[in-house]
Length: 259
Image 1 (cartoon, helix red, strand yellow):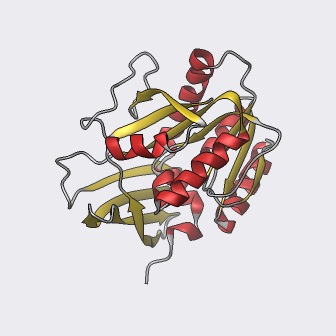
Image 2 (spheres, helix red, strand yellow; image 1 turned 135 degrees about the horizontal axis):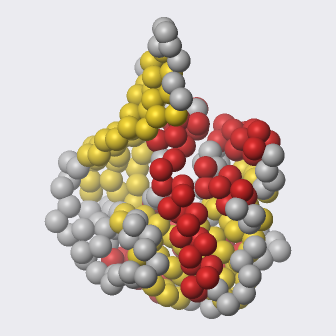
């Protein structure tokens, strides 16, 4: 029986570590382009093992991160301590957490938002983040939109390595229901550590994720007047190449401003 991916957040973070510099660089670029104030306090809701929280703290931001997973938050605290860094981290629910004093910028990349399975929960999250932001503060919200010609059985696979540890990450869409706006995705981590002899472990979870078309996200955002849509980017995070929000874009990073 495979273990849950949540039980060893260090392997999950390793699988996505190549994204960390890009995401943190984008925070820097957005702070310069869209904020007419010094960006100091930065929040990541649903931070998991905290790869981005650690990087933001290392860059001098007052980083804040929270997640529902106890193993993830414990791992993040150990990692910060090893690096000699400080950040405010705690267990919390994305639909209810509000941070005070206000933050300057928040970022939630890589589909974490889609774990909120109902319109009500998604709206509650946006409202909670808006309440946590200063007036004019920025929320960077990244997730995959649903293209009109999506392959219902799509899959991805890649590998990452650190020292003697190798992680092969794969995801596969098991079920897709447009009417209910839920797809079920299987996440699998095959991990090889140490050696010789090598140790092999498999982690696996099936997650339901909420589906959004561009129009559906526009409607959701319209129901949260505390935010306005400033711009849209893809996961290349090129600050000089904003895109149109239409049915062609899939890997989407929204720049939202607190009104």
